[in-house]
Length: 117
Image (cartoon, rainbow, N blue to C red; front, side):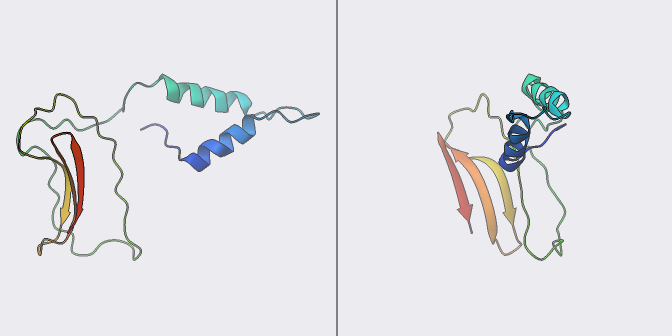
């Protein structure tokens, strides 16, 4: 994506936009408004993966050692369309070790299921 903002970033931007009594507005006002308007004008991501069919997805090689010592973060936006109502589950992600420990999420019927194994 071209822009990435968390709640804290948006609060800082809106504080910069707030008018202050007796003071001039920040010279960053126009660029901030232009960036916010550009974000609002986008209707979808600039890059994405399109998975269709049974067993479609990404497969990563085994990771012997994770970088960092404090864990990791996985973040994704998921758009679901035309999911067939079948008894099988639609896997969103599965991060499992060779022993079967880890996390996974899938859709079963109309329910999002997350598991920690």
